[in-house]
Image (cartoon, rainbow, N blue to C red; front, side, top):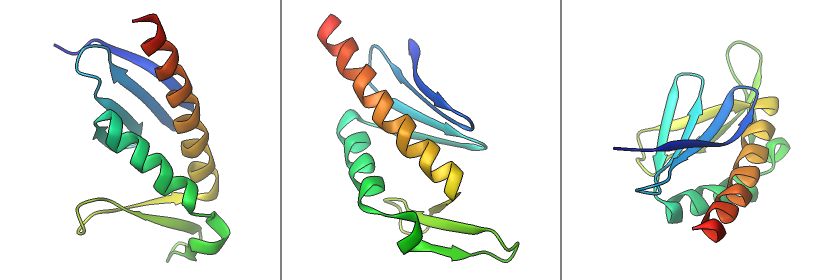
Length: 105
């Protein structure tokens, strides 16, 4: 059974992981993403390669959002500027705390 510990929380983005299986969870509004530690690092690299201003587009509601493609080509995630920045900050913070937990183990 998973022993879930919160690693970071920034507004609507929360990141946690299981102390046993090392699965990383990103909770964002109605989304729950699960990653292996390696996939989580890859997702971070993907997020950090994109600049919001270079990749955003105006959606039908008039809000600018960036589209992040999931490994499954039929699924994409969209984030407003604030959500995008919160998620990037939360990922960086979570990775640091994950390293601390790993040192303690």
